[in-house]
Length: 282
View 1 (cartoon, rainbow, N blue to C red):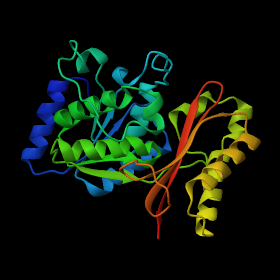
View 2 (cartoon, helix red, strand yellow; view 1 turned 90 degrees about the vertical axis):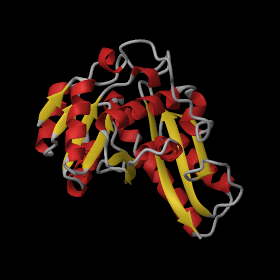
View 3 (tube, rainbow, N blue to C red; view 1 turned 135 degrees about the horizontal axis):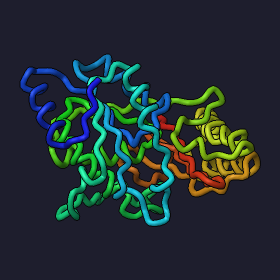
View 4 (cartoon, one colour; view 1 turned 90 degrees about the horizontal axis):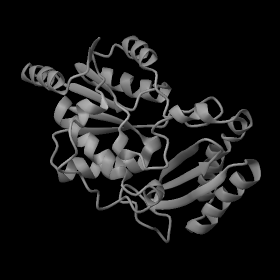
């Protein structure tokens, strides 16, 4: 595996690979790799000739009171995990390399951001769209792989690819979970021991919502109330939101029909967890 820190060098490598007709699978991450990331890398390995992993904690997607400074970082560990997954290139630029001067142009996301995490994180998805635009132009992937845990991010990137005509296939991969159902996340390490015991209630509440829908409930409010009640009664977390929207449009629904997402966010002492369930309802 080759580690590249330079934007120019990564671009030169990518152009050479493309000229050879090789398919590039790209997994963009902020590092501190976990099993969810490794699942993306495995999928990319199966479907492409070359796999490129990027590790970059993107400062412009963090708000002033968010966890940029404390976001977990461990390059040596990430490198070893990437090598074990037969990654071909690890793109590991510095902030100065990615943003050598103040931006003169920045992506502004117009839709799909005024709900869920985007509602409480103004500018976050502008930062995501900007860095993904840069990474697509640097890595030039055939396919890009994202986890469905960050479902709003997937919806935003789907729009970005369509609107900017990127020749990139978006591949969204199912959420990878711990044995007790907790969605894998780099931030899980910040849970206090008691909170780690409580956190699986997020997924259990989503499964209860699914059961209620399968039993015939088609009105959103009883479903969101069920989820809120379960989380409130079985954890010390503070609910940020429990919401249901059409997907990927992320528009409000009055009846549960078609493809919808049930999404939740819960704040614990040192970390905010998100989870979701997507359903195709007849």
